[in-house]
Image (cartoon, rainbow, N blue to C red; front, side):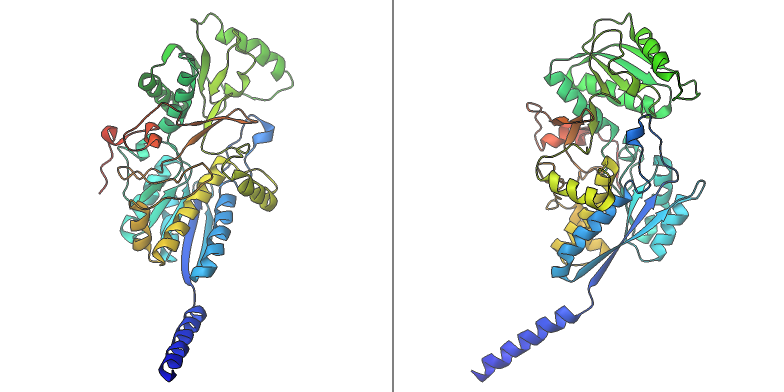
Length: 394
């Protein structure tokens, strides 16, 4: 009996000692591009905290679980100024013993930052750049991609249009490099799923003010003329990432046809109207904290931080190598209010995920669509699959 009591006392002392120990600290960085992209719609202007607000909410969520596991998560934010070097900022975060950096950077800046910290054991989580080349010919072993690719977004849209039997597309492409990359993804999706682009037209960005007192009447005359005399088509698909013309297309085309792509029915990783699979609770919590709705970049940043938190809860450690090995491993998945766990593609470190199709007020559908099958995961019908990849991770 005395030995039993001594044993119990020892166990209680050990538990008390563990609780009294300092928590395991997991520092996460947030590196954000300079400037805010303006939109044509006044109601969709990005907020100053676009993206980082999602990361802050995820830090709260991580720490809720962390209290029980004696883990504590912190977020160190760096907002780049115009002309400031992203690689130097990434190195500065590495010097502060930050092992994971959420990156909201354009493609070239992301690559420079990744190369700068390659030998420091620091991992970037790409929360914004959709460029396929970052996951393919320009892939890096220290960059995990949470944002979907252009090919994933285009495939998600194409599956739905083909499911609807809207297989004849008129495609209008902007004149900027990003527009042409999105157009490449749309062409690939059309060929992949059996649609036909009956004609392509280019909308040149001639500059000038996009909002003027005479703008409505001018656009009302311009768009029908621009889209007339097209071959018979089911849907107009726009590739206009810089929002030069696409938002002006719905209800203004010569023929009464739906618009999709960069306007109308848009493929997104997240939308403020999404309310399935428990999404209402995170939407409400986000609005309460930020007095605005959650954007796709917010959700991608939230997911990136939660991936680290999920790994820490499983390996019960703050060791960056242990966390990374688990995230890259076969047992990893993270819940993100999309109906299924999201996991990482081993061949290019892209996060598998369903894609929402939204019209600005409602979520119309979610891809992958029924009937588009895959031998491993139906999510791999979206984007570049293993046999197609050009990525060689080292």
